[in-house]
Length: 285
Image (tube, rainbow, N blue to C red; front, side):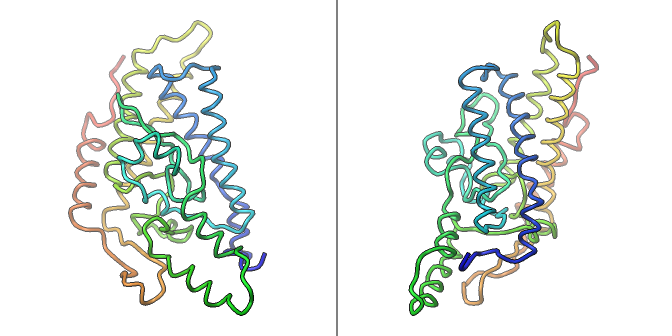
């Protein structure tokens, strides 16, 4: 195992209790409902098969990363912009986040728009970097200097890192599970718009004779759950403090409060699109 980046017992316990498979499966089911409601995915089609295979690859790469000693990286979702995530060619080549060790939110486009690939199907820049540190063959006399050289890249934007403790403490607005993109407010607004669109489409949906209303209940439950996660992303911005694991001398402050403008944008979005009387509403029908 050599220089495995996470060979301690605590990491092993976290890896054994990784929840990504369950979360990715829920994201998949929600996306299938959204795309079916939009008429973009025919059940049983070759496109649907490719969609599910991409989800399986995404999940497997994450779990194989654990077997190689990699810990979760919940800050990796912040490395690409909304414009990059909406670009099919860019996401096909670079993925949707900086690492397969994220709990990657599925990359769904805004209603009425086309987007990038939905799943993380390629290794990210963080993955290449951390594997180089852990496994690059180095002669003993050069090991110390070479490892310092590799580790010195830790402040590069594409190598952003935050793990389980950073997410669990609940104060870091950048280290969150199931978020996506450099702008958390834009991400949350997009997911709330997708949930409202699904609400509206399901109200007009005609069920087949062999279907029950449970189909609608399931779909709306997924939408409510995803909207709740989007609100969680917004809440973390209010009073949030970015926490970094840099060594002294990197030039970055280890603790950085979220700027006032971002906090106000987050609060306004919650007030107008969630807490308002018609924020997430269904008609009596």
